Image (cartoon, rainbow, N blue to C red; front, side, top):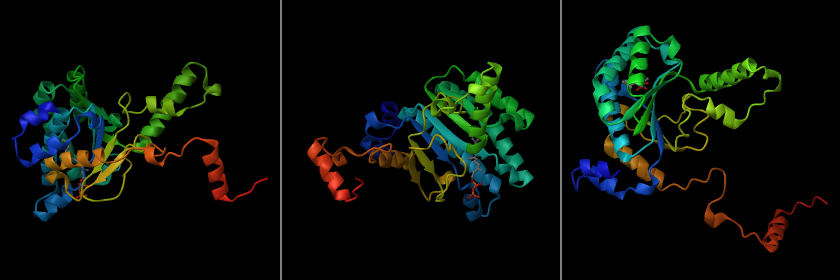
Length: 281
Ligand code: FPP
């Protein structure tokens, strides 16, 4: 956080936004659905892949800002299990971009202490993409400043299915399958994102009000921030605005806010009972 302020020009917009942040309430984990690359390209009469290329530059910018903010983890939705339905040249272009990104950014990931973790069904990726991703993960495995989860060939439902199958396989190996009872903690601990905690904030760019099969289990209590800005245009300032917006929310995790809590004396309990007017005796 201090580092972010030091890297900015005092008085400019980003600096003013960063100075408004409460350093004690920076989200530990942000997840982003990076949408709108295609529309960005279309508006400029460019091929879709150039929208993805511009999106890749936004990835570099946002990863760096998140590390400077002091996040523990950033999870980016880069390729879903359903994105294979896109034209072959677009899918192949995305793999080329990903490989280029890994080569270009590796020195910066190392310098900034960022651990790269690819999450998703990596076995079905083209072999060279998989190889370079695994090499990047290996190279950055000791970095501890921030974890960058890149969701690739990722699906929220597939992730839950994989976690449950993993628990079943483990129980079978131990000869405990017939007594297996699955708890929430057990599923959480086998998700691709473990051991990182659930996202505090989920950002979606380009205005669609959908979750698109992203982190279905983990976002149960995440705060949502949807902006009309297309991903290639998503700036550092907008990220800071999203975090400021998050800091103005009250997170209740299904409970009540402090000022809505009733007093615990028996008089107020019977007042609530009377107000309900549902005699059950
Ligand atoms: C959604 O936009 C974006 C994707 C399916 C791919 C995301 C890829 C990048 C941001 C670039 C490469 C990433 C890395 C990590 C190097 P869309 O194509 O669905 O946009 P549209 O809805 O406007 O068509």
